[in-house]
Length: 336
Image (tube, rainbow, N blue to C red; front, side, top):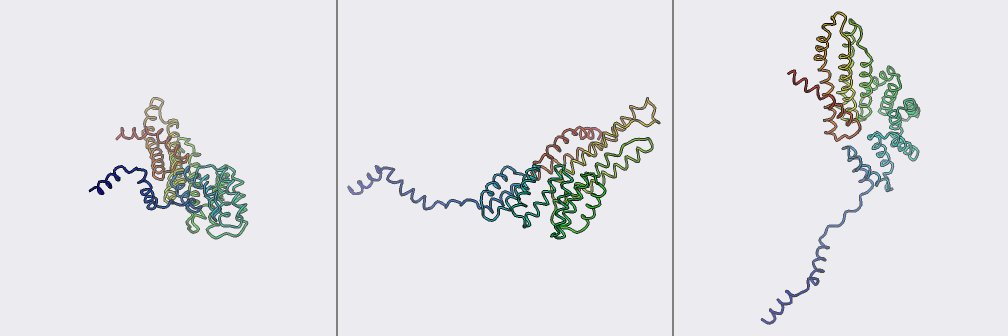
């Protein structure tokens, strides 16, 4: 009994400090090992994945970390940094990164892609002649596959349209869009967008004037907008949100511009001054469907941006224009 009582007393009054080392040692033995730092390849892969869902800030941090390492992927890391600048419309930064890649790794496939994307960024900066010259220099190099050649011709056609050589650019794009397929959906979507821009621009230049000519001109504008709708559908199906959103914005603007032109068009001479207000009211009611279509295109763009998590400036423009045309939906519901 004395022995048992002595053992119990020792257990009760034992210092807690005496028991900690054993528990701590056991815990340390069972704890999982710490995860090693992410490799350059892992940082690159994760950064690209984050960029694709629109998490640009997080993507930038990971790619910047990857750029500090030298594990054989530096070339691809720099290229993806250029692409990240590009999707955020930071064109000058992209041009600088792509030029640096071409200089440091001149004989690689990545350098070739970087030079091509540099031409694209120059075009987005409004330097159309420089962009065309950059593509010509690439084409003169002569070491390109059929897919490479098609992509460069598409880019050249895009730049020609923006430089004011619309017929030449449109012909070049249409020829190369029908000349085989590849997995470079971004450049084909961009080429389709150039066609949408050219068609909606041409529609806006057709003025509604002359009592006899106005109806024919209205049909011409409607036909051009309809054609651009078809291009936008194909572009949308390519799964490139950046260009699809811009196309929806252009279509909405085209419908809204036609709506405004119809409202501002003066009554025909055959309508007496006393009936002018009645005529204008009838035009407003009939033209309302155009404003409703504009709102629908803007709204569709906002929903696509939300679904794809796209956060570029086009999302802000679509949202602002959707909200500004909301009255068209309210009015159409009142009519029903």
